[in-house]
Image (cartoon, rainbow, N blue to C red; front, side, top):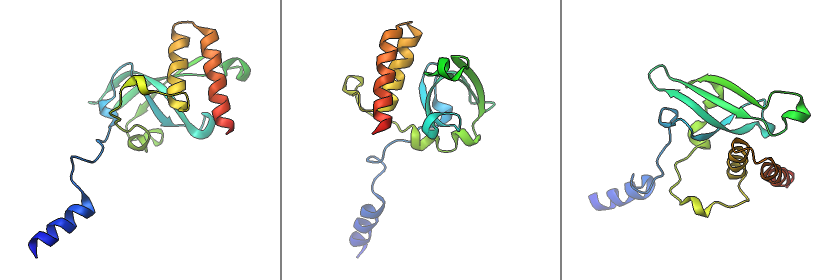
Length: 143
């Protein structure tokens, strides 16, 4: 009877070894790109860069690079400081899961991956490459 209960318990809740690890805001390192919810971003979710993170004060310093800044008439970069309990980070663990896959398997059907590549191209001032990546992102958003 005890073995049946343990098997049922294991089947219902599984072992912790098989569950994906949860990523927390406190674990974000300077230079990491994360996804957040923000009303100012198209579709409400954006991919942004961490400039600094202070787990002691529970605040994170982020930089947004707008792909359409010229059309919108805004600054290309915007910096913001968010509290760990801010509404923009409320679903951080859902948007930023720990994924154990090699970087070489990234594909061009993932908007977050394309956004990261576009931001890297902009950092390197490779504007033609960034424009191509922005077009791919726009095509994916239309689907």
